[in-house]
Image 1 (tube, rainbow, N blue to C red):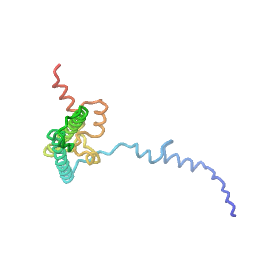
Image 2: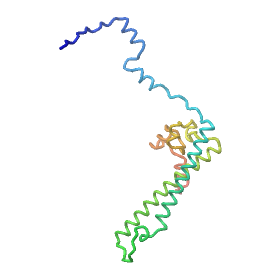
Image 3: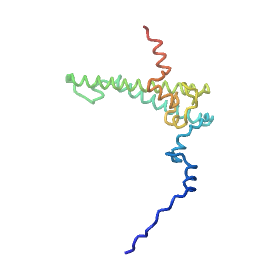
Image 4: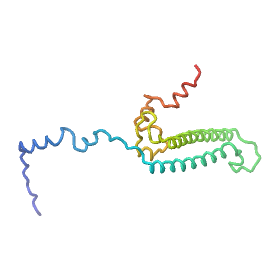
Length: 183
């Protein structure tokens, strides 16, 4: 059996301590110092990137229109017997009617959220035509590409969107609905 080697700790010299103090701040590693630096200014989108986002928006729009049409068909144009495959003409139980009404209201809520997404996509497509796509409507800054890839219809940069979620600032829709509300 081999015996482990004993090592003696290195002595700290004044020169090694001084060089270590010059290269790093106390309590901060080089990695955290880099993470805390100011964010780089985002570069505007190139025409090729705008074309790619336009194609992505058009595909998403087409998909949502198909989904909305299918939900509308299921919610409004089919009766209970058709949707459940019920072939009998027995009287309908009150609980069945309640379930059908709930499902219809739920589907109508989904349709409304999909229509809002369509409005946002249409606004983004209009902004492409106007040459303002990729600019935050709240700050005028360039929206990060990563955000646009995740949500190509984004109207606000992530910082401004966070402020609107916390209700520190109002979106255009909130301002418009406030102005339209009679007192």
